[in-house]
Length: 614
Ligand SMILES: Cc1cc2nc3c(=O)[nH]c(=O)nc-3n(C[C@H](O)[C@H](O)[C@H](O)COP(=O)(O)OP(=O)(O)OC[C@H]3O[C@@H](n4cnc5c(N)ncnc54)[C@H](O)[C@@H]3O)c2cc1C
Image (cartoon, rainbow, N blue to C red; front, top):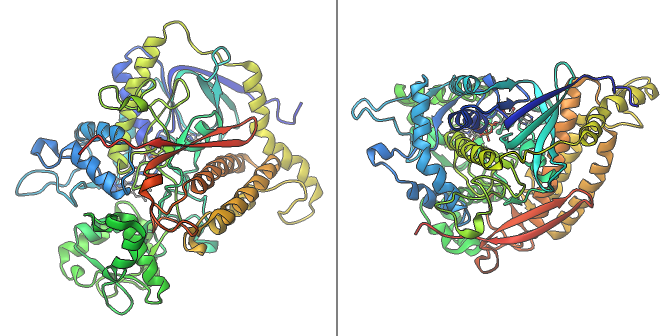
């Protein structure tokens, strides 16, 4: 009997359980109600869906909109675009599926009250770029959340999901999830017929550029804690492209976005001496990746590569030339509004650093790597594709179902489909929910059963850090370092250092190789051993402890994939020093992994890339 065995346990039954109420989770919750009028649809969220997830602060543009009603783009065009940006490797079936449905999601957002900017002459949505449309999006998330709230049977806010539950009757089938309320400390057992994981991406697995006073400032949301990956990995779901971490070129210190600046304000970059530098690195890049450098638009990672090489050549900092554009009062307003609508911190940083972009060209930098499946990279779970479009090899069940029966995913969770962004993630949530309802309808009376022993064991495990702390702190007379427990912050910093130095982070200029990765994996193994001794002083720290657990498992997956792919597919995102060139002969493929929890072993394999769109 542990010190905390007296905690209250709540049981929640549902047909569809949605984990994470961000963009994809809200889309899933909304759509599940459309197809499952009489079903019990439950959404569980560790924050509050009103302002949770990567869109919490708002956005200034919806980055994935075809504009099919005006014949602006077709879904095939978007597949070609994403494939080009990802150096040939995307799940074209999944990408096409999102692109053909995404416009309808955006039209719903407008119907629900999201203010869209319109072109005064044509009346169409105002384009920022070929795929982006501009919005007054401070309230984007509350608007989307309202529709989900109305559709759900129940939304459980402030519950951090820590583990999935498996069916005790049928091997390899999901049966629900457990978690704890971060405010009351109560334990929750969610029993479900189908589970949709929509728990966002992963920040803070690599040491961030902003440390010390700036810690917590990251580009991807600091609360994106890799649950989207760890939850499925732990129950044996196959993952794909976990090596495809993203590095962003952003305004220095505030991670402010550059998209609107490049696309709408037509600003451009230059080195410290006022020279254009990308063309300097053309031959060098061609050596590494061949013709991919001649593609249009130039893949994002290759533009990063030129940036990094120019910095290493000693001609930094690289700056965004804003002084010209900001002389136009309209553009100046747009430049500031862009931050006020989604990254207020950048405006504050500039104010604190005496930067007025009208008079000073601000510095850019490259971020630490993040893991995600919805922005410009495609790490995540390996999912079954749409029945009418996916090749046979990509179909083993229902659309967006992972390799675990009854377990679905959307948004950052699902791999192989970059460039879905907020609208595409929402749309993928809708797609996954429709399939999950079909799955439930086909299930009949054969519903999954949870095992009491399983959730009781998990209950002990979940609250153990509180007990570790309670017992271990007796050994301390002052300070925070204990001989018998590890605080979540200490564990996080250790993780970030390992990933930074061994798995291609900022301090290694994103460089790694087999010996470094092997050593990194060893150190991650020792960190994992120590996680049994995490100590949490309160419920907030208990949440941090479980976020760390999830981050560590996802990091291990990233390191394993990076070791497996023996090429440098995306220079500018990371480099394998022992395999510096892109190798289309051996590696024009997806990488897949499966984690075996009982042994701690990882199994890796290749999967073919099918080019469906010409
Ligand atoms: C800085 C930044 C700028 C961006 N700019 C744009 C842009 O301009 N235009 C655009 O269209 N898109 C943009 N995006 C992308 C967009 O925000 C993402 O594609 C989208 O939010 C992904 O949706 P998601 O549901 O997968 O993740 P999220 O929206 O992040 O939702 C994940 C949810 O899961 C919850 N959660 C996590 N773990 C748990 C757990 N263990 N238990 C319970 N709940 C959990 C989180 O609290 C969160 O609510 C931007 C993203 C960032 C970070």
